[in-house]
Length: 116
Image 1: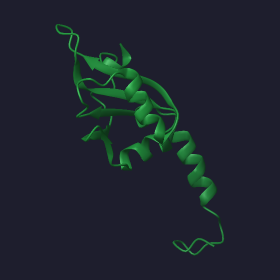
Image 2: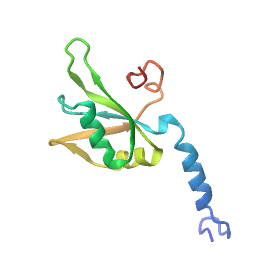
Image 3: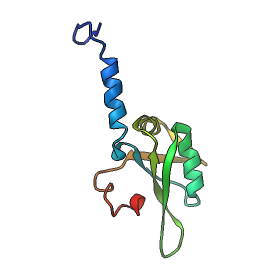
């Protein structure tokens, strides 16, 4: 019995189906990871984010002039649940607190570094 609507219907299967469908939406799986130490490589970021689930793709944004990291990147997780775990976590790397946020709709365009 659902204690919110007092029906005998089990809503958990509906919520699970909705969550599974939402996981297919790319913007719900792509995270912007910032405040990274400048020495972080693509492999470092992938290793860091694998703690929250399977990582599909990683992009560390590099300065074209210097070839050095700009201190942020994008990570596409396998599903929205993994992305959610990363969003909820307090992530530190070599003493730096790393910021993780959802990719904004403005960043989720074809001109975004993740999609180049």
